Image (cartoon, rainbow, N blue to C red; front, side):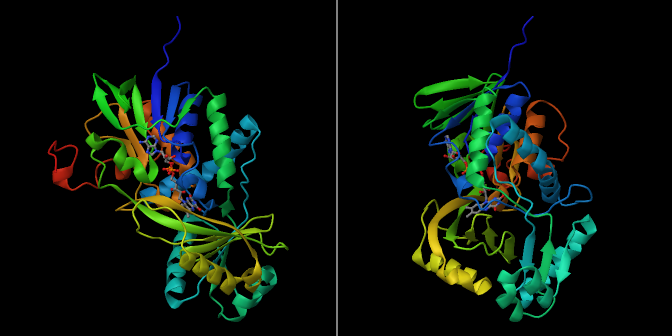
Length: 387
Ligand SMILES: Cc1cc2nc3c(=O)[nH]c(=O)nc-3n(C[C@H](O)[C@H](O)[C@H](O)COP(=O)(O)OP(=O)(O)OC[C@H]3O[C@@H](n4cnc5c(N)ncnc54)[C@H](O)[C@@H]3O)c2cc1C
């Protein structure tokens, strides 16, 4: 007797949708992914690809648990992806410098390093003198700062986001996922124990539907009542190219960073702008990013500008992504709102969402990520009352 394959429809081909589609297909699910534009070209493409350290064991914050699961899974996840597709993702355990420019940043770092210590995450305070020796590109910065302003964190990785997305796309195709590009979903509904999605005037049925629309997730299906859950926050990136290799690390200062690739490119980020769904870079912000880069590594003042771009991060109001079933539905799921960490959280999100779809208990409790908790009570999908 041949078993009938269940069919999942994934809406949105960013890092979250692709990771889930690949994982579900590997588990034997028949999967189709619908993307209104081109797969892997929205926010995930724009991401800097920083994977900061995290550990599952001992983590009490639910988001840190998900981060820990993802972080610890990343090396194997990527090596399986690379072996399967032959596409190299540029995952590198490059280590990260964490620098404090101001007393506030220093205080924040002391809190952070205390927490890392509790979790057993390696972090070393480095004197200014030692910093100059170990990272000569930062010698000028080190001279201007006291001791207790720099920390070395070896378990930080960087990833080449566009390559990772190409590998995920290829893995999906090789695993039998049907990918339809240029297909916009305009509604989703429950129908006799299954789910249906609307494309143009047609409705397509599936056993389950997973909404992964990134910053646009609340617009996919008005009936799902997600409209107050996610807002877009624009981030801009400046890409510089140096003639000589200055560093190969990630250098973090507060919310800004340099990602030093091993080919002389330096990615400078970023900012958090509330400008609705407006993409694009501004001269003022690119200039400010150049100034930031220069303040860390003076040689970057004259580095060639190799590019600049922006992306819309999907932000939720409580900082937790939404991962789970839509309240009241047995077959419609949501995975979105990963804000600044969607690349980092992609393997973990794919694992727990797949477990949920297949009726298994996820290794991380999904209660704190439940869908709909960010709507006001009268707006709640459970209430059935429209605002
Ligand atoms: C400047 C910047 C730097 C960042 N750096 C990092 C970093 O270093 N590390 C990290 O982990 N994260 C980083 N992020 C965050 C990360 O990029 C996001 O969290 C992640 O990309 C979100 O992935 P997603 O799949 O949810 O969304 P997206 O990549 O935006 O994908 C959503 C997809 O859904 C499609 N879609 C939407 N509506 C529909 C519809 N109705 N029908 C069909 N398809 C639809 C869209 O076209 C899109 O392709 C950064 C983000 C930015 C902007």
